[in-house]
Image 1 (cartoon, rainbow, N blue to C red):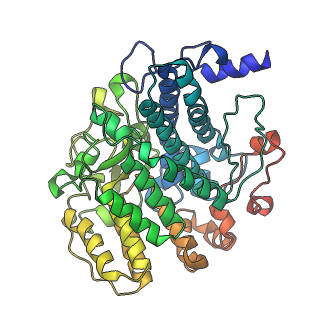
Image 2 (image 1 turned 90 degrees about the vertical axis):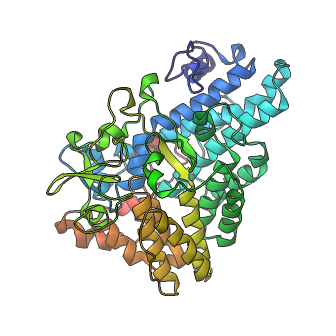
Image 3 (image 1 turned 120 degrees about the horizontal axis):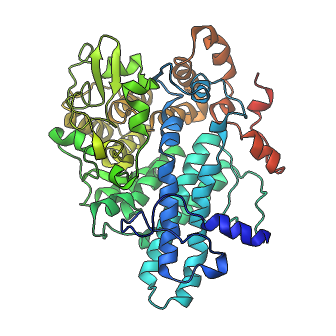
Length: 491
């Protein structure tokens, strides 16, 4: 009976109706146990789509994890308490934001595809090697992306490579080290990249919304940069540069990244379409009437006309102004880079969540080159992005810190509110044996009340405080887990 319950829970899908034809609307039929499932290639595709759908359902969380602890957001009075606690670094293991369960649901769906695709092929003779290898390659990408998020959020996490619905799998496993997890996913990505699609689907939504070789290269470059393996960053970035289906949008089309989305610059975008009841919650989260998040003072100074002449991605594009000290995040609600024309009706909530786009990889490469001392080429790449934004070329001293600061600033300008800022500054703080720890702490404490700044700055000299604790209920459930030591003593 317990076995049947496990399989019933697995099969109960989450989002869409089976009668629809949209590529994200395939799902396993409700109420089946495992021996009645995994018979056809459609079963494999349905569970793969479940992984994509679960990832899409996490869009608010990806925004929170990537932005709230950094310096680009201001919390308003409608901000949920648990998110304010995270923003102010008053983090405890009873905060549900520390619960990693949704990431492991994505991983579990991926593991199911990886495990069962070959078994299905033995039953369904219409299931070709090409189809099977493609589905499995997509599953490896999704699993690897989920683990990369987990490592950057928690540092050490359990490495689960088998579906947890099977009775012979030990679901109570200890954490693996960061390097063990990253070694595993890099190995998986390297082994399966050749089987990933090459923008060969019939629609742009599928080509941008499903794992491609270009998405593989972007993720591999990002992982290599996180690990400070700069030659690998350049290798993956160069490989992606050879893909002529990915180009940097021209200046006057920059906002097309967000409306209508799925642009030529996009590499991997989590798809949303309100007409199909697939809505991005960030429209409701960031519009000014939600009173949850608005641009921070730093953002206003970066983008506002009062402080800058920057037009392409500034006021009216990244943010909108309605009055003195009354600003709104515009990327997820705007239909035009005018700060006035809003998405409405079926288009509200339809902005994609962009995981990777070409400008991101260009600046990854610039960072790697500058850390290797190749300032000339790094300079050209930084100013390639600035030129696209109608910004003047920078003057940068030929040293690693000057280039690091310039690239961090450029990434803040280009990717504001896209879930990258926290991970960027965390990478900076970790580099060269925490040489710039004080800079990271300065950024973190900028978002906390003045009465807490000194105490928090002292606490965060311990880099383990930059990562989240394990959710208390997970610790209770899995006795093999050991809490992040920072949170055993923090008060």
